[in-house]
Image (cartoon, rainbow, N blue to C red; front, side):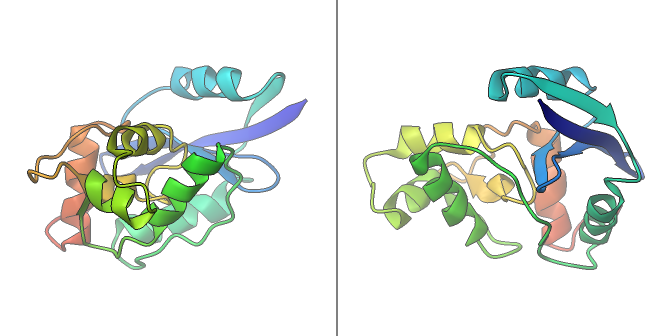
Length: 170
């Protein structure tokens, strides 16, 4: 049975869930969502899973997210334990190449992975990203510049982009 340890990250008014296996961070939750978000995700991804609240075990991740949210670091280098298809992994790797403070379109990602006609599939892979912020899907916008689909919600996307542009502080 897989054990997933979790705690809530809170910095000012920003609150979301962090979850990790013994191998690394496996899930970041949406802004101000409750534990049921993690439960639903875990039930889809694991045959058997035990969710254990353990703030001390998540402290290194918590500290790194605190530094990021305060603008003290630009990259979250915590170990990850993410599972996805080969295509999803390819898209997630491309997301990690988007520089801090910049945005790109879904089409840009599709072109970058050599699949220019797979824009919708790229969007699906981005939507399946279990570790928002670390794999920075918030940096992807519509080709018309609109802030589109984000599992964390548009307010969280706006906050993260403003933070990276130096226009927000927690």
